[in-house]
Image 1 (cartoon, rainbow, N blue to C red):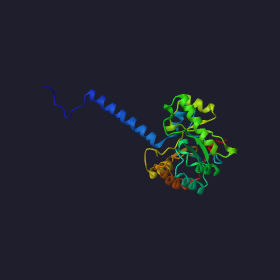
Image 2: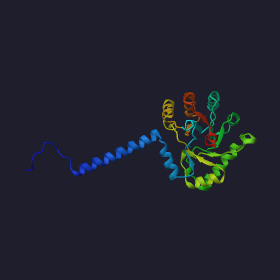
Image 3: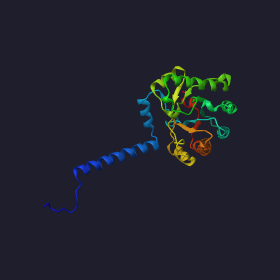
Image 4: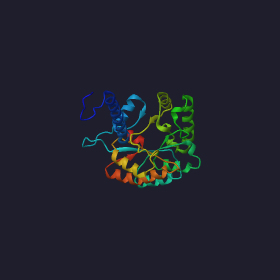
Length: 260
């Protein structure tokens, strides 16, 4: 008859099971923390493992040897009926942004795009449709890039009729896409401050996220459309622009952020 014990001791199998659960939960929480806080090292790692895309920059130091407080504002998936209001808010605060419009959305919004260019905003290439670019063949991706370019360029002033930046649909890319982009004079760009506004329909969350995590050299990613995201971006900008400027930040285009 086995001796009685004051309490049941777990078996080796149970200990291994608890350890696996602990490791899984710890890993999950670490990944979740990384996604929510978006530390800069994550983007540095991504850029090292998958070269060719710009996530953020290291701005030059100011007179106090601190990084200059400059960030780029990018707005995807327009133009929409909300874009003119977004332009008004940007003008009110003296901010220029880089707009990654989808060329299929241009018809009916041509004047809005021209207004953006005339106000000093920058236009990028976001291809023809809101689909994962990485699913396209190399030939289809190149054709899509050129089709979007052909739709956007006529809307730019003649002295500035060029596109420099490319943002792939859904943010995924591969080396072949980078190669094609570079061959046509583009720099592929993603971002480093994304408040999940495509998944979390809350302007309050976006505001809190950006103001909590912003760093000099960040590339902010927000979204426009006629399905509510444009309205949320409008509300977000009304709060974050004066708040960031009060902190001493300059908010500008990608080309200005990366200018030497």
